[in-house]
Length: 192
Image 1 (cartoon, rainbow, N blue to C red):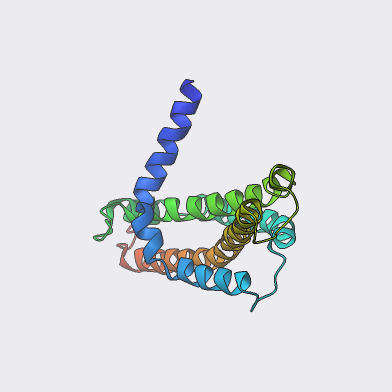
Image 2 (image 1 turned 120 degrees about the vertical axis):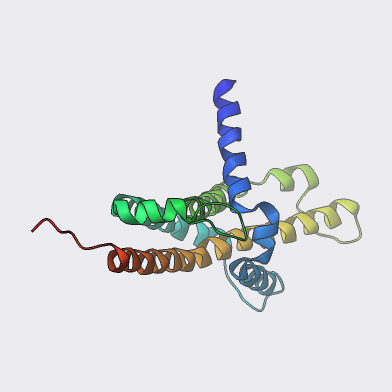
């Protein structure tokens, strides 16, 4: 049981450092994903979210993990120290934690989206409620709501996980700018 406690403790630390629901609800990336998911739900967009999620999210997860690894392995000690000591005023955490939690959030959302796409594909609800989507019966109404909710949630994971790739680019851009600033403001070496 201690492994589960440790897992949930780490996930709680991530969620707290990220800013919980409040931070997600303010995200323009999340807002765009909500809009695109709604458009897919009502048929303005016609995307087979499940097939797209199963085929693209693993590649996105690989890219996100590679960017995560590269960002922290190539980060010089000056930039690491600068990020560790700089505090984000709005969240009250160091910029190093913010970069870390941003990358983790991206990987977490993409992984959750992929797992959702493969775990909800079966016919569990069809077998329980029947295949009828007749809106005259309670089973038909429940089944239709489940189908629509599944489509919206799956689309949301797909769109949000995809749009978060832009946040990787933004994080790398910020790191590059901070790296340039730490190199400029570093005192010259007087060894020679």
